[in-house]
Each structure stands twice: as structure tokens, then as C-alpha cells.
Length: 206
View 1 (cartoon, rainbow, N blue to C red):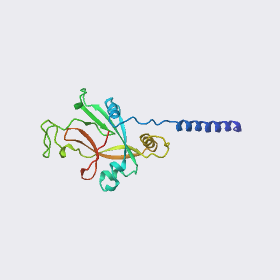
View 2: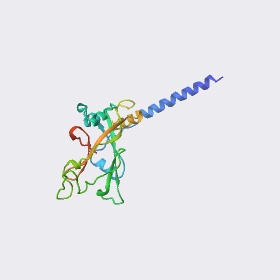
View 3: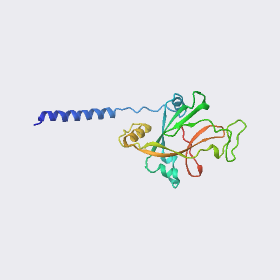
View 4: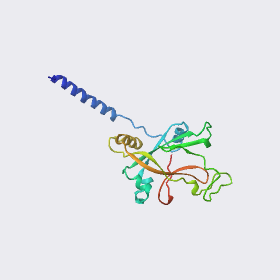
């Protein structure tokens, strides 16, 4: 027969272990962000690390414009927030910006340099080289699979929003399918936009 004292000790040890773990979890810090939207992401991307950003679903895919494939797809799982990750990688041994590409979540690397001088469908080139704004500078829609979640659940009240969303997404395995487009503006600058009706896209900040 299993000794009663041994069983009591095991039960007590288990309860004590759970209490300790709960206290450790409750004491987890959520450091305030030191991010002005420019310096921090630039530093992370230039160091070759992955930058992860959190975005609100209703802002970038307004539910009032449902009926568009990209918006309907984003609202399938009914998650309030989604995450996108960005990584800069050289496309060759050359480290110049012209040789860089960006990886967005699980999307294949996209070159950062503007399209070549040859454009279809009536595209034209400016005097200095980069193509003028035209349909050719806006990519076709592409979809990435993104972590997604809410701030509630197991998160503590003082957790920063980004930490709470990513932690919730990892626990619930929350995912969304985000439809994006890339474009080069009239100055040859690379931009990332969400897809939407009539190509009215919302820029994704880094």
C-alpha cells in the first residue's frame, strides 16, 4: 500500500512547485519599448537580425470594406492583431543597398532595388533612373502566414501590447493570412502595403 505520508509529500511538492512557477511568471518584466519608429528598426535590420512588428487587424484590413478577398481572408480567424517579421539579407557578396533584399515573414526574399529600365504596359523611366509611379511599380498581391492573437488570455495586465500578442499567439497557435503588395514610389523608395479594394493600400510601417 502506498504510504499516506509519501503521497502527501508528493502532493505538497507539486503544489509548491506550481506556486513558485506562478510567482515567477507574475514577476516577468515587460520592458517598455525604446522605439521612435526609425532608429530601433533601422538598427535591428542593419545588424542582420529579424524585426517583428504588431499591427491591428481592423486598421489595416477595415471590416467595413468586407467583400474584398484580402480583407475577408484577414478576418477569417477573428484575431485582433497580427505580426509581421522583416529581415534584410544580401542577394550577393556585395553589401551595397542595391544588392539587398527583404524577407517578409515566410515570403521569399524581395529585392529592394527598383525594377529595371524595361517596363511593360506603357511604364516609363524618369530622367534619373527610377521608374515613375505606374501600375508596374505595384506588385501583384502575395500572402504571408502571420502569427496573430489578442492581448487577453494568459497575459498579465502590465505586459506591453506586442509582448502580449506574441505570447498569446504562441500559446494558441493563432495564425492569419495577410495579403500584401510592394511598390516603389516616384522617388524609387521601397514600400510595403496591405492589399485592399481598388488598390487603396495602407502603408505598413517598419
